[in-house]
Length: 239
Image (cartoon, rainbow, N blue to C red; front, side, top):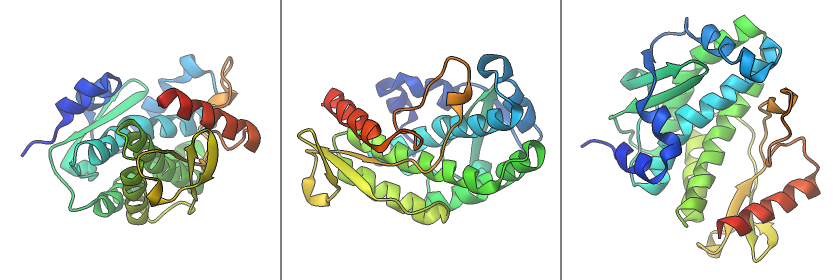
């Protein structure tokens, strides 16, 4: 049975270029060229550009698959060899018709799939692996929570996030928080669909170093009080 990618794209057109666009790439030789394709747009030193590229990889390759898991009762495999990794300049994508046994299994598949890419980023751009794995874990976690909030099922979003991270086996454990009636509290499943769930990011994308850019709403470099106020505002806009 085919996976409901078309339904995802119809509901969330922002994912179309990542699911159906680009040209297929294999191996790892293409990675440095893809990173450097963003040099003119972001005007960052190569090391920081490579970290931003890896953050964007999470948003374009990982996020659509995780949204399928939370919103469409489908669990796509994150084994890259069982699907198509694509590239269009700086931006990447992924499409597969293979399913994983569980979200935890998909997380484990992702760990095996991205390890060679992380090695290339380290050897070519002198990036340490730990921040790249943190970005990968954040991509899984943030995508699952975003999908849970968008589909009014934040509890499922947290469950999928936890399973994916358990499978990945990398990244620090984090607490989940919830916004309820304009107040922030610790997440509890009993809150049901009446809350907006978020978790503090443990990684930085480096986009704030690009001329004209600022800190992301969830950036760990933002003061706690400001970040929490922004999350309350985001929750209010979502509901």
